Length: 405
Image (cartoon, rainbow, N blue to C red):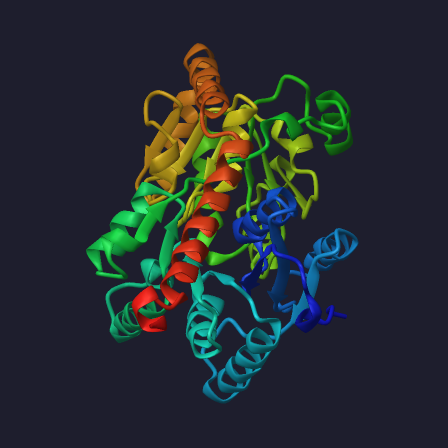
């Protein structure tokens, strides 16, 4: 149940966060904004679709307890013209009623609908975070060109495009999505001080029946095509040829979970792979690993690499936007071509065979994260952005002295 937004009488900036992609890193990004933004300066509302992640309802309970206005507007990931028009009109109505000062739209679907709806509803300031563009993972095709066209058209309706990495900004500039003067980079960050396991590594290893001395290679990811888990699974037999003592750990859930499970059985390596499903506290499982893997086909700027590096793990990652913004190949991990299972296997074996190099990379990665942007600095950048955009728009709406004469 949402609050009646029409009866606010405080002077805070009224901000609506709008999200359809309530999964993975976008879900995490939203949670940090809602948790850390200064509630004395910003009145926060969340307009969401609860169709993607079955675990998102836990977040909603937290937000409700925080006093955040919750408004459900069901949105589908795929383009469905009739439904999308209904959702669009619903957004226009909600935004008009809410009398928001600023809308922050996230990801492609909500990003398109919300930007246009916000301007039609008269919202004076609009911010958009793509969290990777939908066309990035598509081969050049009419569909990819159509998605790029949608982004180019919708760019007319935002005041700031916020990229989570320099690589994402390069994509925006390459395809002329928005203009450089309205595009900013605010790299993701994590609360490093919260990365504390609640269980011992030895206890978890025993529960998973993994020998204490066995090398363990792991991934934390949604089981979706984006994460390229199939390519990691294809690399596993190659790794076992060189290191028959190795074990593998997959943390996460998603639509491809059963398919991945079947492929592991088909390869006859189920005795070496542990699938532990979705974990609200994946930090407990990072600490078991010797090497962290992320075989994504595309990314924005993945939180899981932040977490792995913060815990001192060397990272083997595909050389994509986002991953390469974090992993310094040869220093904090190794970058490999996307969808290249032999390259993934080779990099992992190299690190398993050279523990001193592996440990040095892990330590360098931890230092990079600890020295990097803190959560305090991260949220301050968003607060400054909101104040700047809302303030500029407020100034532009004030009638000039000459107009009053």
